Image 1 (tube, rainbow, N blue to C red):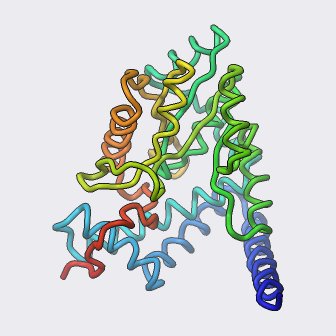
Image 2: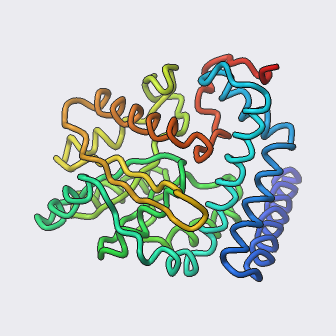
Length: 298
């Protein structure tokens, strides 16, 4: 019992520390807020040993041949992207105003509009790349509500704040739980649209290729699309500079089988990351099943 109380106290303290930091950042104008949050996270990823080691481990494993200076530069870009994205998520009204002019591009947007006109749902798939929530904002600008799926945080107090922040970009929000999954299935069956992020390690899932290395990848989105004959659309919010985000919905993945379709998505995401490697969340232990080298290059 004492351990539970101590953990709850720690969780409350962590959640309040995050709330205070976000409150302080929100005292700044939106543009300055993003710059400061990006800089703080940039320094953290570059200089906090545990964070830097995770980035170095992933880069050494899937992008060999980079120098230490290149690792440092990319780690800074990753941190800046993460910090900027997270403060944008917690600044939904400001982000929505700044993103009012974003219009989705790509063949997938036409396919999505067609499905909605027929009363059908759709499944969008993306990863922790660029500003993924810009996709839901851009669709809302076009009158299309897009729900989101997320993994509940271990800190229940922070989780409440994060769930509320995500809901500002579109509802409903589905936790990655059995009840949340059932609600998601009902939502898309009844004509709703939802976006799932498929780039996290899930041990029970099949091993598929990602950057030429085996990575456990969830096939649920493809299975759902096949079962209910829904379009499965890769989508991305790609930063062009500090103030411009391009939202792209690629052509729907051709129906075949869940493994083939999910591999197609992995290849699509990999291609986008190779174009903008500093916008990917390299802190994920994406290849957790592999004993990757942990030391950066010389």
